Image 1: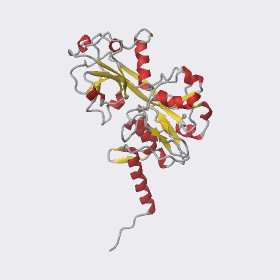
Image 2 (image 1 turned 90 degrees about the vertical axis):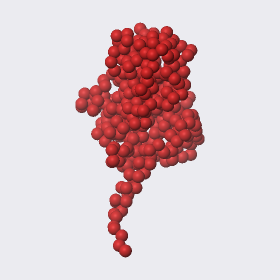
Image 3 (image 1 turned 180 degrees about the vertical axis):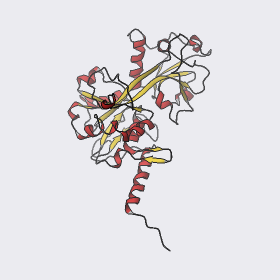
Length: 348
């Protein structure tokens, strides 16, 4: 019986694709390798960065990622355990290093790049927030690569919340002035206000937006605000009734979330103001001493992989939109060293 001949090259390609599919589809944390480029931090960008690294499925096709041809793997540890969903469990970043508690969120990731918590096993932090004053003082550098939008998220097909919620109304929800949805055009139902966990970039970004809407004065959160939920976790609406939480518009549109959450980011709210819908850039953050190293210049900097056409689809698969490069009027890969963050949201 004759067997069809299959070339060694074809076998290798198929094997690589299968490996990539396995790695992309919510498998366990990566097994440490010596030359890995290691990142931790933001929940917002982890899906996009995993797709950039290991590839993603586009329709019936598999699109390979950076690691398919790279000499050193891009490795991104999720903000929570990708198999069990556990937070703060122990992870081993590199061969021969001690395990650490998994960092959950932008701030938690960036904190491991400087100061007494500095961990040299980590190369970069995923971040959905701009640099803080302390991070700037420590010499951290942020490389923008994608656009996200944050809006007020409520349960899918809910009848308790109005179709549009303004920034001014969110201030009154989170400071406790509004306690019932009927105070802003919704149903007669108590409001459950949620915030992501401490260390979340989405949390810090959202609170900054509330501050801006409150005459540039910090909003004093009501004691009733629940401040411990995982960011962009649409299952919170099963756990908390009549809830509202800041949510990534792009993440809400991903298949895993579309049946659970809807965002109130279009139209006019009952107070006559536009619905809250805030744009932000997302970043990969490194130490200033590393800006000339190959992993930065090949991955994060202007003209590097994350700003090129090969990464556009992978970034989109994670609910984000690739920022345009300088040649196209954008800022992708242009380093940021201040707290101001990016205000040019031109995309590809």
